[in-house]
Amino acid sequence: MHTCDNRKCVNPDHLKLGSIADNIKDAAAKNRIQHGETHSNATLTNRQCDEIRASTEVQSVVAKRYGISQSHVSNIRQGKRRSKDHLSTPL
Image 1: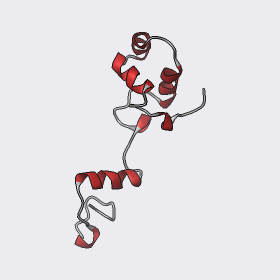
Image 2: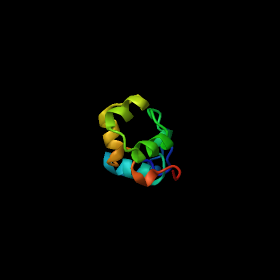
Image 3: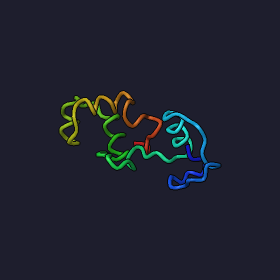
């Protein structure tokens, strides 16, 4: 793991032993992992996720409206994707 956060660095003093899980935890603690609408593969904005979570329509209707799968709607509503901790703005 690079303590200096420079992947190209080869200084052995800037390296420490750690597992892949340790490296991921370190990156997350330093806000170096993209998530939510800033992730390169994001298909929805935070606002759209808020709207999906607030909607009372059946999942298949919501999925069709946003061009996503019914299971994706289910995961958003259950907090498995874009958890409620990452709400963008109040509705």
